[in-house]
Image (cartoon, rainbow, N blue to C red; front, side, top):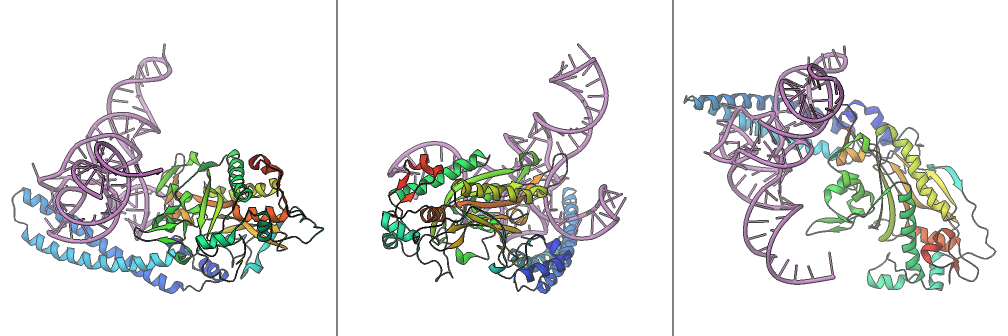
Length: 421
RNA sequence: GGAGAGGUGGCCGAGCUGGUCGAAGGCAGCCGCCUGCUAAGCGGUUGUGGGGGUAACACCUCACCCAGGGUUCGAAUCCCUGCCUCUCCGCCA
């Protein structure tokens, strides 16, 4: 969420941001309501002040056993007026708040301007796509040959866009989680295992609600949501807290299942593991001082890249442009892994700096050493990595002519085998 | 699922027969004094958010005693709803 004062005082910046993000939001109504709200607030507060002063006087008179009925009558009227003001204020506040909750973050000046994913900019590449002396297969074909992926039965159990891993496939999934968590904790990230069902406040805190309800699985009675990413529960660990400067940066890593409706992606990636309603992911989350956040974004992105490098998977780093960047993010790098089955780089991680956008929604602040008052922290997160897609990348990149798959060196102790066949 | 207790400032803890309560007292923190150092002791001070104000402070004001409603001239205190915590019984991985 943006600061309403910031919006009021920086209309041009906001307008440009909305234009670059392809958002058709009019600020005029917001500014009008904001103006009304502030002038009403002032009047209402003056009346409250009057009531406070006179009520005290009434108390004094009663102790002295003097008559205060005329003052009480007057205050009845004042109280009625206050109620009327409050009702109006409440409406205006709901309007402006609703507006702010639906307003996206302002992209950092280093974010390339562009209208969709074609405007994204490649920053660097690592690794060379392997040259095959045979026609590389898709991961679902490899999975079928090795009998480690079973989509038919998964759809019987749950439905479309669910998967079932089996044998070495299931073990590979577990090996990847452990490998990633071990690597992350060795870098100083604290491992947490949070709830994967959360309340509305948490979803609002990180920005999924109110705007993206359609993308979430919801449980009613009682009302809960399944998390679409560990970002939600982990960032909300510190909701409504004031942290000490010396505690920062706080770094967490978490493995969780993730659940997404994938509404509106009907034609996309219908086969295979790429786009599932349920998938596993290891996430990195950081809480940092404002002046450190862009530097920390680089460090967090490097941590995610390190996993790909240790697995020997070729990838590239892409800076998302203003038209493709997420609602809450001020800057995002996507990591895209090479998939021989598709002859394409596909997203496997997304690392973002949210600056104070989530912190303001979730009310996560910190106090500077020796200074009065509080400031919002900056929050960041990134996948390290999406497990299912990593499994896809391994199957496709390490496949052999005979249909077997070589286990990357880094995973052999976790897998207890060198080849899946 | 049944029965009960409770949620107050960084922490502990009073207030809860409605008024002078942003809230006693203690601890912790900060500033100063004192003893040759340390400890103890003495004095002062220390919440968050909004609005106004200032060059910036100061300052003025409103709100906040789990959350949301209600009663009242006035609510931390009374009433209702929700959430959470704890104890006992039952049930269960």
